[in-house]
Image (cartoon, rainbow, N blue to C red; front, side):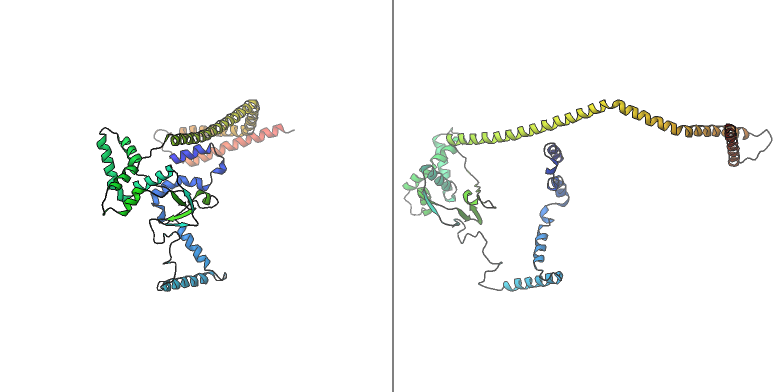
Length: 373
């Protein structure tokens, strides 16, 4: 019901051309999901795609069924034989479009690379990202938090995470430098040292079966792959400049939303004023033509009265005659004492009716004879 009410409210704002069949379809989605279940078990997209495949088999338009049958048989034969081929790139063994080429962790680049130098803030952000997202440093992360907690027993969880985020890179670097252990993994030593200052950038990159583009590359493309989502396991501690930029961005978004709300309010007020104006015009028009409507109604009623007057008088005469017949019938139906009278009520009523009609026509004929010259 909330969907229906929302659409009813939208009908007050948007024009009728906005509400096409796709907008109306939203009303039936919930009921269809309850009746038929998940949509993937009953939608028609796979069937429509397969019908397109069958349509591509048609070579002779005068015999489409035979063409489809021959094309289907040829496709099945080729598919069956291709399963026994070796060393040939077919659709059942070809590499996916966004394959990692044997390196599922690092992926591979697309196009040429450009080198640039990281500043201190970018270097620290890259280093912290590697430290906090590496499983080989989980034990050092727990040790650093425990050390901070021992130094200050009353520290809050927020301050603990903030201190750990800001000082973990330096702490783990000195920790690894002081450890002289041959069993220390080389990966841990490299992670504690940090990345190189000189980095490389690419316009496109493929990793984990997904392809990502920078915004400048994806600006003129129909498919947008520039968005990267990273699930953060640590808290974010922004500086004052970043907070001010975030607040300014939120203010801009709030202004846009407020502008849209004001537009909706103005549209609603304009529509309400138009409705009130139309209602007032209709009321004024009715009040102005009230006497005309009354006179017209009286004329129609007077005409109906003139046309129906003779019929009403005849009906009244007929009703009076029926009442008189009923009274006479009740009198004749009471026999004298000791005398049996055989009566037929239907026959008696017919005779009385014929007698009354004869008298009525006789009176009408005599009146017409007297009125004629």
